[in-house]
Length: 280
Image (cartoon, rainbow, N blue to C red; front, top):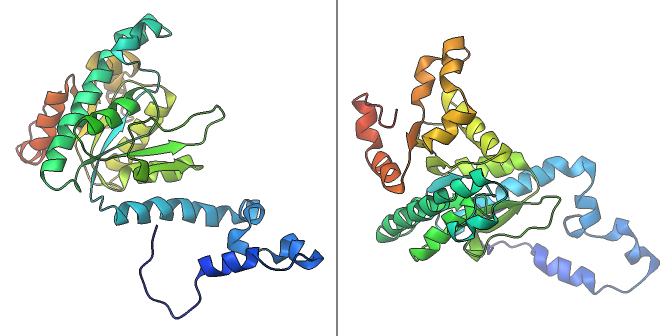
């Protein structure tokens, strides 16, 4: 990340390098003498959490600005959804049956990225969680189209790395789930949710809540696989109970294929104005 602004002051890089070459004395070996911004132990102190939150919000924001990322298409979905080629190794028959959504996610990302590339490659860039499963399919589809894609990874207790299809300069790693979810939505032009588990449900409901409460503008919100989503969530029961309004069921649409999703995204403004409810 390069800062081209001119400043008359000596820059931080220069001083950090200079501090590494100071004489070795009891004073310079003391943790107190380390430059605060270069002191990892200090930066990880409990009291520095507000600073770390700010840094985690700021770093990806600055780097995406510098990369010319104007808007994104968000793809949420399960890490355990296998590539159909590998479906025989799926943990359950249901996961194997859901493997076709890997192909739909890959196709959707490819088609969206082709449209993005054709208009300069700064709008509607695919963003995923950067992991395996549906996330890999999304980044892979963008790669197939010769475009860029973003991966918002997070440190987990088990070893993982971004999937190999994320654009390296747009592969980010997070400590805070909350900041990661902010970056998913800050540039979102559409949100597509594929079958998944707790993480996917968390992302789905937080995004819907932001739209429902007016904290985020309404964008195309597409759930891939009506049978899956209606099987795990009784949407109508929420409305019948009065815990959500009937109109809240119009905040999202069900789709089955990449082509259906793209048609809804492309016609979103006109269909919303006419009061149509495609996919319901």
